[in-house]
Length: 620
Image (cartoon, rainbow, N blue to C red; front, side, top):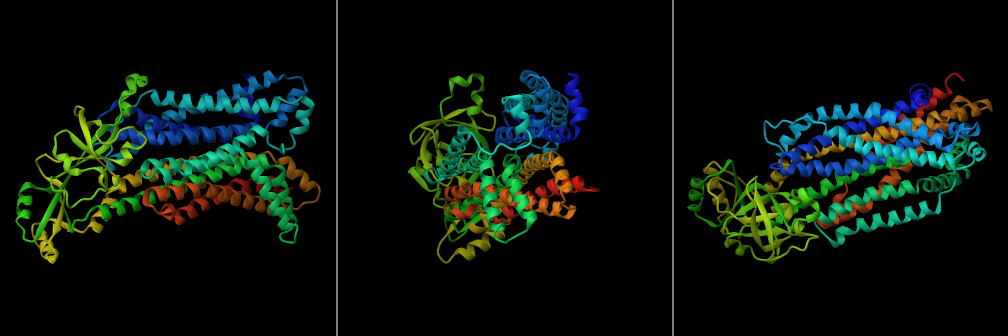
């Protein structure tokens, strides 16, 4: 214990400080997410809260495990020589593994609980965003508990111990003599198992990216978007090989007369230290990939929603009102000359269960209820076209019937004629028979029912007789109603989702900030481990300017490699998402967002390398 504390607080203080910051950020994010996830479980009447928190928790868990493991592995990798010397003077492999394990546990014990507590109390700051997205009602407050702390430790402790065990095993597997010899160089090759794993993962990522071509809609596109992360994992497995290949191509160019001695030396370093460099390249590539796939998916969803709304509203005019269109106004509208058809739409929050409860879930069967918006239609549905592919909306006249989107029942055995369970708000569950399945779920929601409620309606769709559209429009405006076209209504629906987009943006920025911090820490750790290398170069005649130029080339190589890997990983996902949602592979590409995230990766690379090199060569 005393040796571990001295290592943390004195000997390896700089490296531990960086790792501690990354662990603290991870703990804060996990604490915030777990707090809201717990709130969703405690408040089943707010189904969208569990859905949003659970969706973000899945992504955060994957990224946190990946980045924290990478940071611990990087810090411990730079101590290979220390471990080799300890073995050379008599320390056993078990003693070294025990020391590493103790250090990791101490660091987690010092940092993770504090970060989780901060995250628990910081979770309340997300409430305004959730309220703006109608996920929680006004006046909702978050109750602090010990669950976020426990959840954070459950994630971080096994992750840290696993990374420590793998790194310590690699450091103690060779004999003491071989370990000392190998501690000054990178292992130039990858094991056969790792090569196979990289190839299989890459093929799996490409296969997942193709899912939207066979399962269009939200379900297939959501699966396709995850392929970007899978391909980044494949790049992490094959990282050293990719860096070596790129360095060799660069050396072929520089040796043909392009560049100078600094470029050749930088590329030789990249080729020789491919493991160290790939540990920095992959997190930066993840930064590019994660940001681009999120913004691209949002862009594709917006385009697909607008296209479905315009195609699915054959009405000439769309009427809305701040307090809803009242029954009195509906009567006056019916008397307006020139109107041939009207359809009302009324939305209410609810939840749906499309499959029988899984007995294996036991008391967690409530997780099978999916939050949704139940949209009620009037009997005359001539002004809407949800693109029914089986059944008929006319069958909704029968009591206890429902129409569902193809997205809702995708990958389930539920279909036309089957029975689902439906809840409105926190009311009791009722059985409903599926009488129609439609494809335009983004425009009309997942559930359509016949509207038999009284009171104001949210939206009125009006079909006018040929030649009477202008007169009907003026008559409706005279009734103090907002009147627009299908295109205008689609634009207003997208604007009404600004709160959801702000929430999504904040969550993504928080996640990307964590990834950037972890990537920057990996670069700084690698730079600190090169003190001896830069000292030797200066003793053999290299000037400060030459070393800075060499570091500049290495930085450029790192940044370009990260952007290229991140872009290659994200392109298949965006092609699939665009095809699955909008039927256009290019609809998922947001070039401006990609450029911004690529620039962020370059900035992190520059800040992570050049200042450290400047300090190393200063005054020599």
